[in-house]
Amino acid sequence: VSGVMRTGEARALTWSDVHLDGPDPYIDVNKTMSDVTGKGIVVNAPKTKAGNRTVKLDPITTQALRHWRAIQGQRLMRRGLTPDVVWTNQRLTNRISSNQPREWLLSAIKDTDVPQINIHGLRHTYITLAVEANIPIKALQAQIGHDDINTTLGVYTAVTKDMRAKTTELFTSLVNF
Image (cartoon, rainbow, N blue to C red):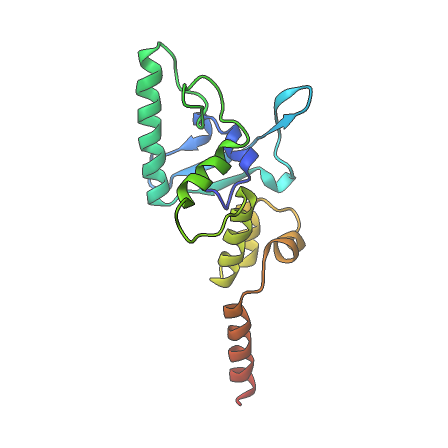
């Protein structure tokens, strides 16, 4: 979900947006959250019209979300509360801070050879790998919530060495060298 959704979209999720039951689990992306100086946390409509979308979930992500929902629900019910916000702070009293996803990422890659990257960099990586894997670009555009295909292609995709090699091999096969 980290590559498909913007950080603000993930932070704004409520459990009513997350549909884990049935054969095709999904998330309704319909809002985004930002920290506005002088106003605090603000929840608005998505960044673009295409930002209102359905994100399909894979089985591993679905299971992780089910597990988190159960843990969070048990802890909140003990206090007489009902779970609403998906991503909460450790005390389950408020939404996660804007820097929490970065802290989680840094913790996950600590003592590894994985280079440090910001959370939005994961989105760039996801989109580039999806293009490299030949996911249809229009399907990718809809999945990540871009109004303009040029944003998907021009800003978010990087040309990798594998892509360059495949281009050369494809051209050679087309002209029969």
